[in-house]
Length: 417
RNA sequence: GUGGGCGUAGCUCAGCUGGUAGAGCACUCGGUUGUGGUCCGAGAUGUCGCGGGUUCGAGCCCCGUCGUUCACCCCA
Image (spheres, chains in turn cyan, purple):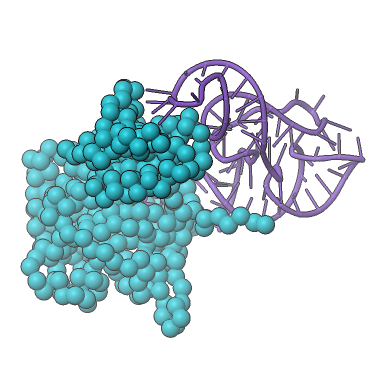
């Protein structure tokens, strides 16, 4: 009999580590809320066409990493490989782009890419993303980056911020012409030539020495920025400086999704393996229009919750077992006949807002106390014949070991603060 | 899609030149008629990932397969 296993390459979180996952996710979400971003809860599957048009058919993500299938109505459906396209689709569908701008939303949930699993790379992974849609203001570029920065600082996570600008379409086409020309004179193997043909910028982040040295003198997009793009980009840098957010301008940074324009950025942790990007994003000028909405710009990021968790663990930043959300009280019943009483008491305490649990099963007192200890509860109470007939129990402080007598009927009040 | 490492108890792992499986932790019970954490004692636990091959004999060698992991590629 074969045991059924999780599908290959998915990331799963179960106790006790799930607590850490939850903690990271909550911290990231709080940072988004703090800056006025509101929830967008979206489907995990969309029409395949959305990603082909939105993300771009030439990208690896779309051309070879999507989970695509036909539904029962013969429609081509794809499990979302990223979040921005779905947000745009929804904004357009419900006419949010016709209302007050910018539209500021956050989303969180699972994403899917059919890649070969690796450290920090999963087929189902989790992201927290935000989007500020509708205005091309550099102030928004900075706000978006600041949301991530604030979250990382709250976690105590050290990271590096790389930024660059991809400029507007005129900047890019002028640069591309020169870059393709430059690359055509290089000595490259067939696979690399193929990659260059799909997206010449790719060669900038090749890890091989021979490519890096050949690309050393390649024309940089930053040198081709239009007046307007250059002005906006320097404003972004100035503001980041004012907010004391450290960054490095990296003109060789490459992003994998086609829709990026203008300011783009990447958050990197050096505590991770080869998959060191813990988040990234940028501006997208043409995306809304491409998907049939107003011709307005937007900017956003996606943060990899799995990788941030890994990085935090590597830095030893986790809350640990101790801590806040442990139980207030743990009840132990002595004798089978007193169980019903304890079950009722437990339920009453919970109704009163006290986090409590009890020893289930038929264990000896020693075992039950052990269970109380494991639960992390702050207090424990043993309830047997004596307690029920006298109405008085010993409330034991698990940390100090001290007990004090309390009326059973007044237990709830002991925790009311 | 390509390449390397690894699959043995719930977990982390040991297992000699092939001779029929172990440790620590965790778990259960007891030492303490109704009070946990430390200590002491006892106990339970394995299709040695799966399939095939070589051999008198395979956890160990060979082939395949699945899983996992790391890297390329790509990205969160």
